[in-house]
Length: 88
Image (spheres, helix red, strand yellow):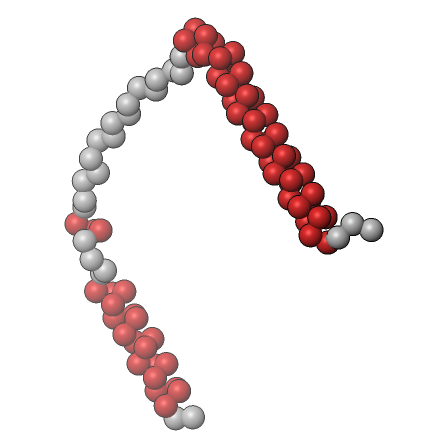
């Protein structure tokens, strides 16, 4: 039976060879795809969408703050809640 260090060296060599093969294959694949698609990219460029400008939104007086009736309702609800929960 081979020694353990010999097996590790063989496994490392096989792993390194596999990684080099995959890296080379992917590099060649990228080069081939770029050379095949370059003429098509010149022939069919991406369409440019026209810029859409929106008119500015004007603020109305109703959007500036909360109406006094809403503030009064919230204040009444908070005070009622505090009165109920402070007695317990």
